[in-house]
Image (tube, rainbow, N blue to C red; front, top):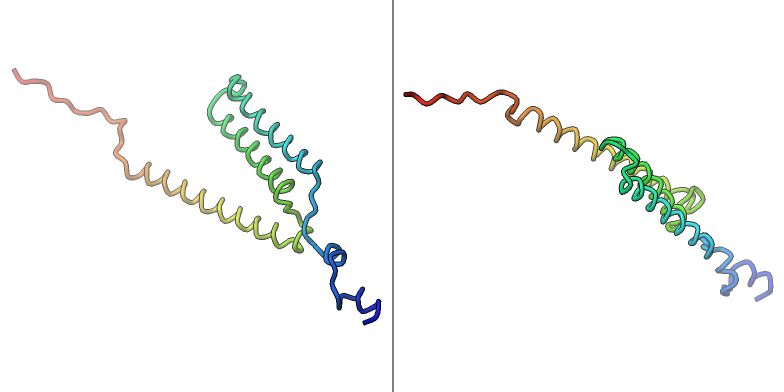
Length: 135
């Protein structure tokens, strides 16, 4: 076997396998960046709610939801190493499909539950007819 055959892949060694590995290579600084961002993205919403900076339920839910989505993206990028380069983008594409499917399923479920509640439950805004005691 010639040196060319060995380098061409007919005989594998650990060094050649390492160069052909398409998986993500993480660094300590990458993990620390993700960790620090996660802590910040947890602490800010916690402070916003505990210090009563946000007035009202709807704005609080919207702000917390935005921070949650950002934190999910940080976890996907820094810890799960999901980007358009890994596995030719198929991992990211399948994740996007899953997110779209979950959003459709959740919104449809909430829509059905809201309309079932509005249309099937008795109306409580009508006063009850209480008969006066007969004397």
